[in-house]
Amino acid sequence: MGAASRRTLVGRVLVVPALAVPALALSLGACAPAPAAAPPPPPQVVTVEAPVDVAKAQVPAPEPRPDLSALTVVDPLHVVPGLPGLDGLTQLENDDPTAGRWRTAVVTRDTAAYDAPGGTAVGRLPAYTLGVPTTVPVVEVGDEGWLRVMVAARGALPSDDATQVNGRTAWVRAFDTRPAGTDWRIEVSTHDQTVTIDEGDGPTTYAVIATGAPSRPTPRAPQFVVGTFWDQPGTYTPRVVLLSSQSETIDAYDRETGTSATAFHTTPLRGRGEISNGCIRLSDDVLDVLWHRVPAGTLVLVS
Image (tube, rainbow, N blue to C red):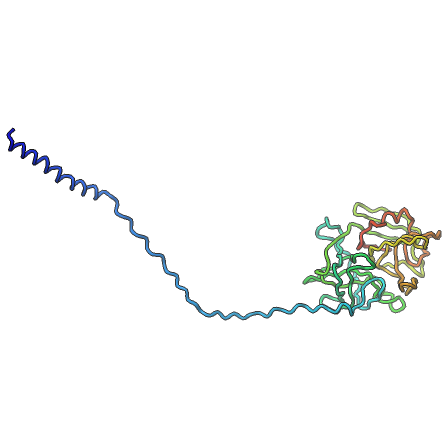
């Protein structure tokens, strides 16, 4: 092969790569994916400001609180006319029995006692009654936070209206109380001369020494333990557990206090049967079952 031929071959060899590379590049470019299209721009949020005319409600004025200092204290030392009766109601059971089966309320601050929910304030139920926290049985629950409770005050003197003496109730605001309860219940039979005490685990019946005489009977209206325990050695009532009721025949056999209070108490007297001024006289052994043990607000039923 001559020099001319070698030049031609070389020229051809050189020419072929020069022509083939751009063609390969074009071929690869045709197989490559097309660039992704750009996402559309997000829609623009257009805010249109417009005046909003909203009527503003008037904030209700707080319920006026009555002047408690002008109201009679609802306790055993006072007569409070206008207190409603029980109307056949009895102590409610607690929704939560762990708080005690029977529902009571402890008054946490002096509060007005009303004759009806939102009615007339007829007295002042104090946070303490004769030195102990006021604890009362709950007999009815009203709307809007009202409670109807039994109270330890006379609605009238026996000489004025014996039917208004005992079994008095009052409506109070629940926010002035805290919920409580008792498992106890006590029943007194003047006929059998017995007292039956149920501490929540079953009743036990004991003999009593005396109850009220026929002319001065033990009050039959439902009543409750006030929670006061008086120790008076050397008297006719050495140990006393005060009840909420008072005599319905005697205005005041206790001249010092002007009351005729009913109570469970011990006695040095030997007489037995229906002979007292209305109190239930017990032996020391029986009173020991109650002494500083029976909860305030425990219902006592007399038959």
